[in-house]
Image 1 (tube, rainbow, N blue to C red):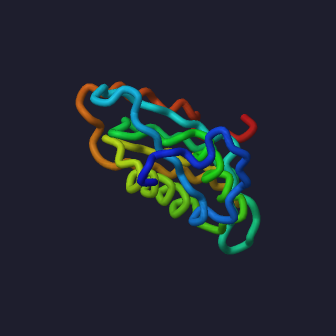
Image 2 (image 1 turned 90 degrees about the horizontal axis):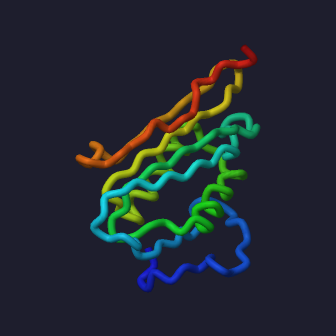
Length: 152
């Protein structure tokens, strides 16, 4: 998290980072500090690379979190997620790694991520991770992504 919480990307022209590690995520003060609410980001066209074959992998990511003192700025999140296009990683590593980085930097009250990966080799893989129990009183809707059904 930056010391000043001044976003680097908001209102600026920003290039896609060369890697997820090089991506800078911006955080701004929570506009409703003390209120218990949930924020959802959906990235239905997320891509990364298979670490074995180098072929593209596609996923629908859903990130839910209950803010603490800060919220993640959406343009910086978009650039961070876009940086995975040339990143090789197994579905489990990519999904959990995104959640853990957001948790470590933003320090929300709670966070979960669902990675709904499209099939390669005939097997879809769904990966789920959350930071801990859902805070009491937080409304957490279903992520709304249907299980893979193929063409039927």
